[in-house]
Length: 204
Image (cartoon, rainbow, N blue to C red):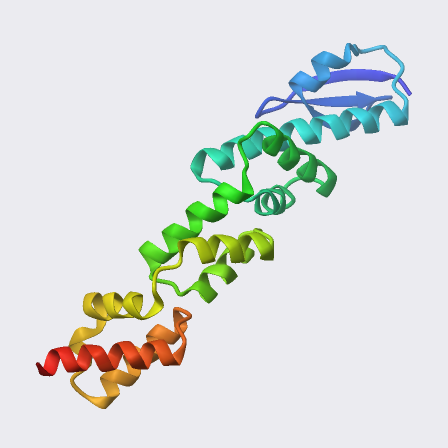
């Protein structure tokens, strides 16, 4: 088939027409590097190669934008890119970001674990689940949570003092507090022990 026309599109894209019909959208840089011009022969294989290269380039640009907002794990980044681009292009773009040092799962896991313990008050089990939900593998999630975990009972005590002390005057309030702490991932033994200590402190 013959490349019959090339027309500019928005967002840095160009549309390729072959034998008078639209064949594909490419990013402008991929098209310019191809050296193609109207009138040239364009095989199906060459067109697939160009579309694949363009998908990867566009996915890399999207990845840079996403990483400009916040850090991501490699798997999380690939998953987000896969909502817009073919899976292979998304995976290649995420791999490229990792090669460039813009994605580091170990550092991401450590930083996020510390943030979840400090800012959200999560227990280690909840932190591990959240890290894995963000694409961190289990072993790395467990390691990051273990390294950053504060002493559970003391963590519960600080949360109670900050958010729930006013609810501890009756049984209903204590149950609500215990339920809230369980949702954060704390074990019942740590909750009960910390609440008992807090109640003794209040009585004194």
